[in-house]
Image (cartoon, rainbow, N blue to C red; front, side, top):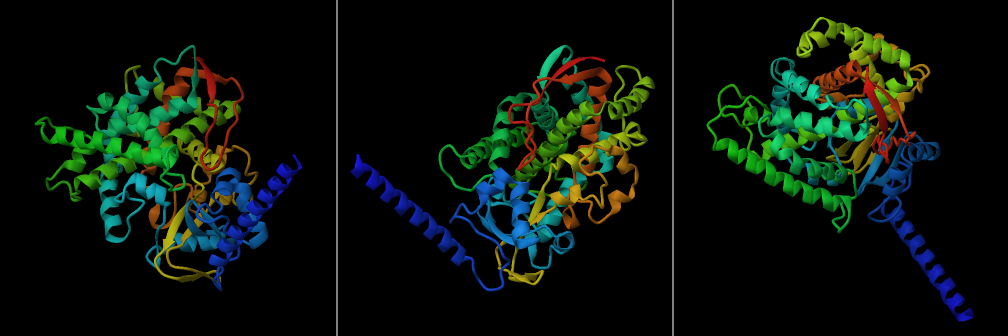
Length: 470
């Protein structure tokens, strides 16, 4: 027994020595003169575990130790983290000056090399132009909103007297609504196979890029392969069909003069995945959190419901929501927009953006080597009491001051040259969902489930509500 204890102690001391040596070696590896202060954690893994588990607390602790510009190693990359508002604005506005999109390798691998977040320069302009042509105000008004209205009306039609997981429902809603806009006719037939693979793809984009069995990264890569097969088959069927379609896929595949942006099949597929991915996260999470916040603030819910009921009173039951119905909503833009803005601010759906250095550069007096990521961490701006008095309160009325939207620190929908191109489409989807949900139903939460807000806003065990007719 004594011998066993001696061996155990020796093994422990050896393991501790190896761990200490590895940490020391990794710190020395990134100890070049002039680098920002900070720690780098373990080789390969860096501080990813602490970053993902502790989230905002990790950031605050590092800032307290090293200041608002520090180094770390997260999601497989050496990274300079900026929590300085002025520096953040400079980085976002100067993409061409040694900075390009720097999303994690896992996201690039899984979303595709042609996705709009990964490309830059002329290719970014081409892909962004093709995307904006699909989701311009004219397209939303004439083609997309009728599809959104039909889908939302049917999607919430049978929730009366049911207990539902609103998190799961809003995930399905965001995915299926986008899929219908992309491939209106075929969306129903491909959704069953497509949707579970898409959810795996989403989880894989925010993971360490280590291709081992059982990891989210491996599942994400496998899901991408299956999705590629589905979309290649869909494009092939469209080419062999004489029937005309009026949806996003038809526009992307069009070779006539009306389509200024001719894309290859690979670019079309990555564009479709990008549309699904970018809309899914923001629309589903904002819709879920809007339901949560409105439940917790009955007076705001009543203001919102009053506005939407006024729209319904002017229509027959079967009449759809139209573009002109959305624009004058005093409280949803006024509640249409300001509830959405306040939900996005308070829940902080997006915590920051990543850039990558194409050359060694100096920022805030420190050297950032070529190939490093720069994490523009914008979360704290959403809780700045000088910008948003009483920042932890859900107060949509603060957005009645339109100057908040025009301020340079308004980064809810991105910043610089990378403003979210789908902002208006996302607002239209969330507004239409809320319209049919709150004019048909009342609801109460059951279970009191826990909410996590980092790295993604989610309820680990779901967010269950009991729904009844209004």
